[in-house]
Length: 271
Image 1 (cartoon, helix red, strand yellow):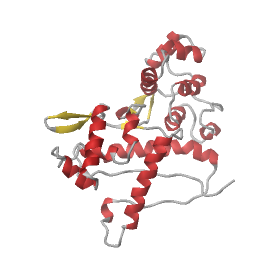
Image 2 (cartoon, one colour):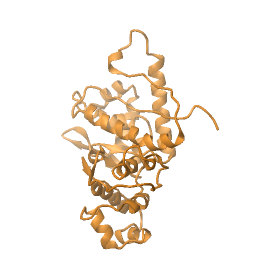
Image 3 (cartoon, rainbow, N blue to C red):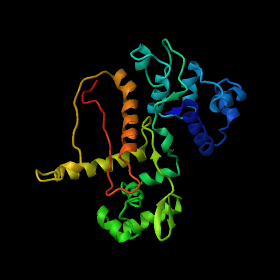
Image 4 (cartoon, helix red, strand yellow):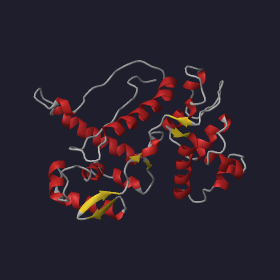
């Protein structure tokens, strides 16, 4: 469980670090609030008023799935307000909870600098490879197990070190960010490219998924269903949050293999 103000504070800190001119005073002015009032909200001294929640989340670039989690604390289950568009706040709110169910606490918010890891599909697996229990610092073995040319791994490692995402310690590479989280609220070319490359990897695995394949270490499944755009907009945030919660359970400090977990939700019918 994490407090609402702690989640908002994390986004405020990222906004202040990555956006020129972003400050407590400038954001308060944009929201027509006093700086002291906004400060009390972000410090947890005052709960977030329901009408302030949506514009504050917009100002702080809070992703859709996180906003849905925060808004759910104010809205009775099953009420019309639960299935509204992303940042519309209407309907009969209730008093917001001070804590909400979110996996965000353990994750670092990605920014422009950390977007480097999405440049090629294998940058993230390289980061994760350094946490394997069998990793001994040998880049050649890393290349072999990831199915990559050794020079490509050397280039990737050099770039990851230059951007502060890897550091060398006792002859081994160590991740500087425990977990990185990208939002799904906006379509970003670099994120689309990364997922496209990972889908190609998934297709490769599927084509080689024979009857004798190791089915215990992979999951190939999907569901086709009917729904409404309004309900999809309301519930896709819960799906994204669940994936992060599941990742928290799957992650091990020293695992044996690197895995990729993803989900695709898209319409098959056209307007």
